[in-house]
Image (cartoon, rainbow, N blue to C red):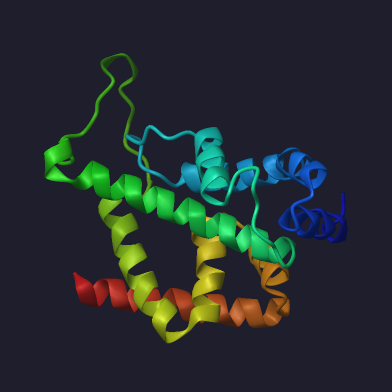
Length: 188
């Protein structure tokens, strides 16, 4: 199905069309799951949330079967990326909280793994805090970062979702990465 058809179904669902709402999740599910899987691949080894659960929780936060009025496909995926980001931030905060045993690391004795290059909760929260400041300074570029980092979109897909030229997205991405790296480094 092409992006234009998805936009029409999103708009019909937002207008209360029950048949459009019923079509929506099956149409978008695989793409949402792909985005969630890309994000979850960067999570630390101790996380318990699976991509399918992330998609379902994000779907519920977006309104479930009572979808709001989406302007287009890009609007929907931007909101989905933001919902996934917030879910992951909430989980990172709760895992880090002392009262939840956040300083303890879960270890499955049967499946001891060698640590890999994944994002820790502290790193995720540092990115989140820097991104909040960046959003206040430059919301458009911050949206690109959210789509790439938390939504798992390629630079080309993010440019299309934001309706900006690829060259602009590339410049924004380079600037945003540098800004965030400097901000995170300064905060440490």
